[in-house]
Length: 68
Image (cartoon, rainbow, N blue to C red; front, top):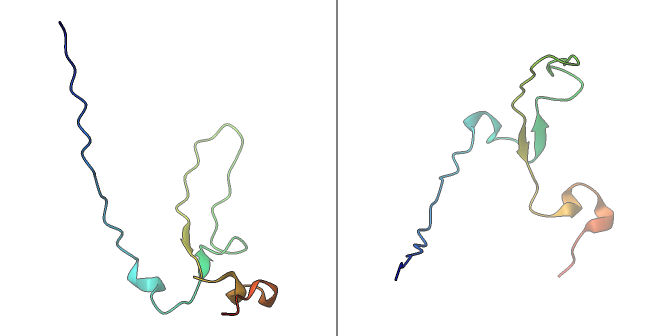
């Protein structure tokens, strides 16, 4: 009889926030209007984009403000 063992090992990857965004409340970097690399069809393209999201959607638009 052939037996198999399934091992469930939780793996974690630490999240290390970039210090240059620590003073910002939320945003996307680089700004899509400035400092964004242009891409061309058929040419390898790579761009690192950082997102810092608000904890409440009401920070973006008061319509979504949660009142407790």
